[in-house]
Length: 83
Image (tube, rainbow, N blue to C red; front, top):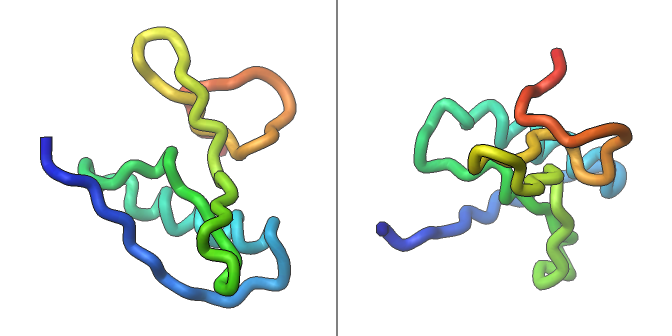
């Protein structure tokens, strides 16, 4: 297995939910790349980069798949994105 790396890309957002929305959209836009692990997407404040906040639930589900919904979502986990 190849080593994993993390890209740090600073951006501005009004608050944590806006930052999570931006990061989630960015991660999903790159999901066509097999080497990108969108489910592990996190955000952190620039002055607190050691405090990571998850964007996606990513809970393991049956069949080895993971929940693709946003963190702290309402309802059941799912492997399908809602449109």
